[in-house]
Amino acid sequence: MADANSIIIDLKFSRDEVVSALENAFPGRTVIDMGNPSSAWQDLSKAAYAVVWKPDPLLFKRATGLKAVFSGGAGVDHVMTTPDLPDVPVVRFVDRSLTDRMSEWVVWQCLHHLRHGFVYARQQERRTWAEVKRQPEARDVTVGVMGLGVLGADAAQKLKTMGFSVLGWSRRKKQLDGIETYDASDLEEFLARTDILVGLLPLTPETRGMFDRAIFEKLNRHGALGGPIFLNAGRGGSQVESDLIACLSDGTLKAASLDVFEREPLAVDSPLWAMENVVVTPHAAAASEVRALFRHVQEQISRIEAGKPLENIVDRSVGY
Image (cartoon, rainbow, N blue to C red; front, side, top):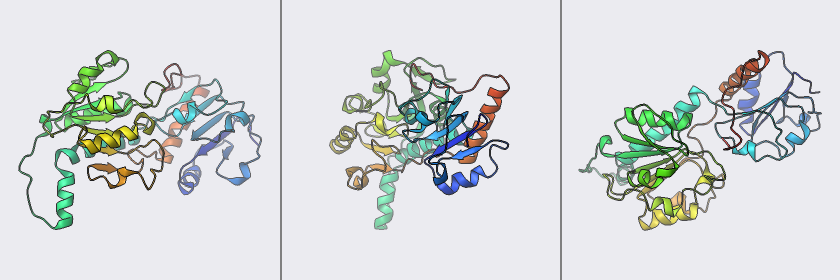
């Protein structure tokens, strides 16, 4: 039975990973693992904390005594849209490993497009030996990162280290060392200068469906890569996939790398699977490491119980 020392775990992750990570997590606490069938009818009303990723729609109706809710990932839209969410702090998962993994994916995809990855992959399939003579340098390409939270800021800095020209955009103006940044009032200028657009936006009412034809048509059409490229590893709901497919087909976009989709898993009949100018990865750019997540949660609970403020609390007025 839950008590004031209890923590609820409701994570739609690999069961083996969750069970293994829980073996040494949260010493001295009652842990209620919602993935265990025995928890289905347990009284959750006195539990103090919940760690969730795409939680059961009835969870917050049952767990009415929570002091804080912890997201199992950097995104929080899956929490904020759950019915009966209590008026308690919601905490994002911020961790070095998660941040590094996202930046690795972004840098990998930018280099893939810079270094003719599609061309050489097709040549390998045909056993063709032919060098692409036109090879721009990273410094010739401007990458525009939309979303400058922890993940976006880190990706922007690492792209800069690789030699790319980097711009940053966020709804509200942010300062990044050595990187020119824009806010909502300067979106069109930002887009006009961008050769590779990187989407790392949170999903909010303002960003839902933001990446549409109108955005893609404003990207730089005269850059070193021969056309604009779109990368999205933020949230699938931020892109309009019908527009994206059409723009990839008619040349509005030269290519894309996509880790997130409007509906996941991506439908087997989606045209994106077969498009020769598209990289598809299965929402794997920055998978949460469960042990790191539990360490993060334990650190934050220790802060609460020591009378210290929580870190990385979601601002409910903006949704992230």
